[in-house]
Length: 391
Image 1 (cartoon, rainbow, N blue to C red):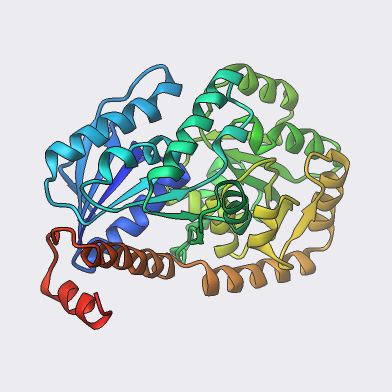
Image 2 (cartoon, rainbow, N blue to C red):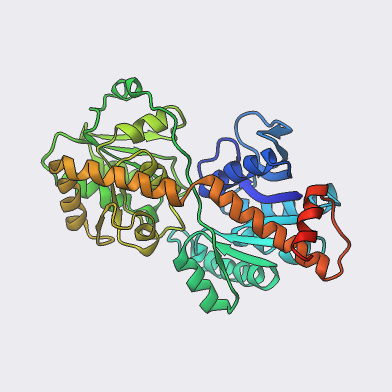
């Protein structure tokens, strides 16, 4: 099949959930013999025509940052119509790209994958939220099929729009062997620090995590990885909260192999989010066997189940108690980490996610053939599948 992904931000280096889904699913689809195109805004590094089997379509980065997704999605949709006259399925990420289904859907089915309820995020103004509401309505009106990365989102959107939304989570992979010698180079005590890897935006709850940590009388450290969001005042506020405490470390954007080593050597991972789609960083922490402490929002609890510690979202005192518990009861924390690892590697692997999306692509393309549309380009193996399925 020929599959086009719209739209990623700086695909190769980007640390967001959409970028990771596109990388991990896209390269697995390419390895299975599918032709995969990806429309991505440019980053700071190289812009290869092909990456990990994906045919890349690089686009400009629009400014200011809040225009990047809507303008980039429109630009990508127009290019997709011009670049690729033969496509079997468009895979559209979230509502900015999803709103392009009305433009692209006449050519091929459009799968809309939701990664969160975008207009609920705190960083948007009232005007921006109104725009996001409009994009959401357009997306759900014109998309051929709908998926979301959490069961709560599926229920929310089904009730809101009266359309079925299939639960397909994001995933994780068996981590590579960590390099523990990298952690002491950062001045961190192995297995005696709390770690979180999130963008520095308000809904990630860092303004709860830092005060909770500072209330602890401990020689543990707090390590925060992740780039700054668009709210510079909030980022300054976080550093003011931390003050001059030498135990608090802001690492900025971290990549492998250092990132995996920091996950693996952490005493506990903390996800203090107020809002989530499905937190890939939490999945990654679980895959490393790290004890996880999460806010009790449904999206986090769906992931960790009973194999983690939870606190009342936004409650600094409760968060501090759970952090202290993880430090004082190392045997329990380590057992929870091992159980979490077993859970995530049995239920949330990238291969399983790719299987489910691939099956959905086939169903969409087969439905198009049944409706009498002109068949798109596909290999003989796909035609055999369509015949066997009754298409």
